[in-house]
Every structure is written in C-alpha cells, then in structure tokens.
Image (cartoon, rainbow, N blue to C red; front, top):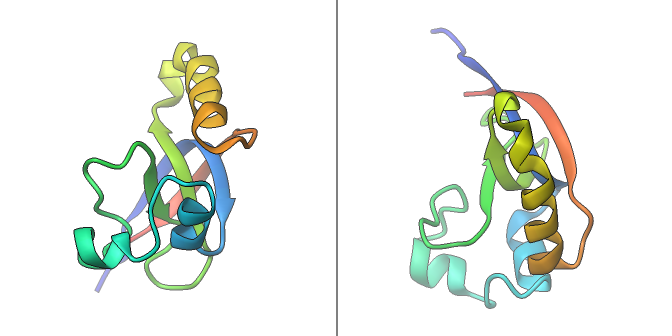
Amino acid sequence: MGVDVTAMTYVGVHVDDAEAYLVEKGVLEEGELEEKYGGDIGYMPDCPLEVQAVSYYSDQGYYVGYEVSPSDYKLFDGLIAEFKALTGDDAEVESFNHWH
C-alpha cells in the first residue's frame, strides 16, 4: 500500500474544525453540513470556500479558502480580498503536502 502526496497551495486559513469555523463565519448554517452535504466537509460544491484536510491519515486540521496553483500568483490579491469579505479574517498563503 502506498501513500500519495500532493503539493498544494491555499489562500485562506488553517483551522482545527472546519465546520465550526464555517458556521461561526456565517458561510454554513448550523446542521447544514449534515443535511445538505451528508456530513462530507470535503465535498460542498456550492459552498463559496473550499475545505481540504491536511492529511486523511491524521488529525492535522483543515485549510479553508481557495486552492490555487503557485503559477496563478496574480490571483492571490483578489482571493485574499474575497476571503476577507466572506469571513472577516485575513487570509494567508500556505503551501503544504497533502497526504492521501
């Protein structure tokens, strides 16, 4: 059995509990994750923010924001502003290895 690793870049924030963060920021309503998305935090096609677990093998939290390619650096300023408008929080640009 092998482990795949994907390098990812996110504009957003790292949180321990993505659902609680999205509810606190008004992006999701309480219970909406279960009712609308079957509890799958990684698959919410009409949610304005993406959620990615740092690792499927351990509890290292989540990145909430936008996945971007480092070559799309011209998009970063707009995504940072959009994240701030949606959440009220300052976004960070994070690169990490996703273990899946």
